[in-house]
Length: 246
Image 1: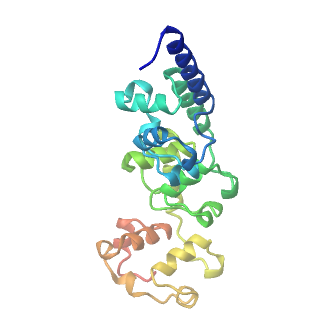
Image 2 (image 1 turned 45 degrees about the vertical axis):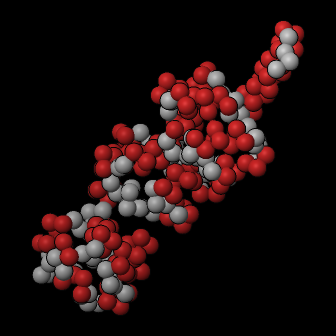
């Protein structure tokens, strides 16, 4: 191969310098097309595609693991990306600190990219987020969330205890009885829920029943059950009032 001790050491020193540069920047400032092929390949092993890499979209899964949880293949890929075990652990600690921030009270436009992506995983849109809306997932207890949803909740700043506290508050909120309120006085999310159940301002204000009110709870779609819960119902209350006027 043409090496002697001196040229081998020079090449090794050059390699170490290259690795130091990689470790300093982790290639994060490079666009996908600028990455060497081996770095693209290493990034792909962690689930990155050009879209995620270039748009700073977090990948769920392997990048969240501790170093000793990575397979030898992934540890090798991490080294190619410029990490060492110490650097990997430092980055993980920084991410945990960042994730401990609670973003719930921030406007959508002020959310970091990874937090927006986590919010989308939980079903949020800009409109829902900025208007304190709920999604089908925010109405679930922590143990009913799958691992991806739990991870998204953690990125938003939740712990299991905080999520469950919010869930309990929500359970109390949805039991507010809105049926005596005029349409114009209903919160936007309640008007939306009423519309899903077939109400208009005219039918609501004039106590006109809708076909959905005559259905048993199990005959309602998931969306309609969610709407009924927003109006203050649960399964038992819906069934108790099934034959009464709304």
